Image 1 (tube, one colour):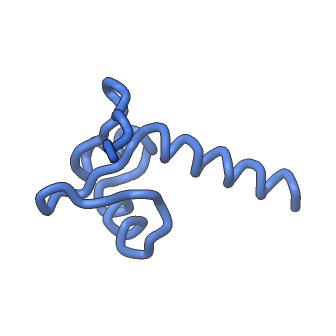
Image 2: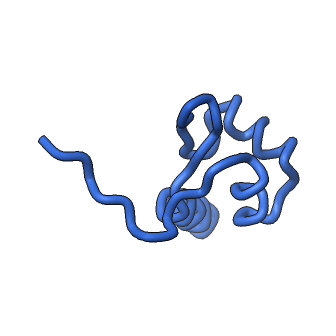
Length: 68
């Protein structure tokens, strides 16, 4: 079985890259990762996330807010 292909530019490596994408601080990224709030994973000890996963996560938040 092969791993799913990662789209070019979809990978965010490091808390700074994730923070820039989400518009939050680096410290907030570490808290969101620690609390397992955002979809993330570690690559060689470095926190990483996919733009596509974070976008889907944010869309889910918007959907939850509209439903309430």
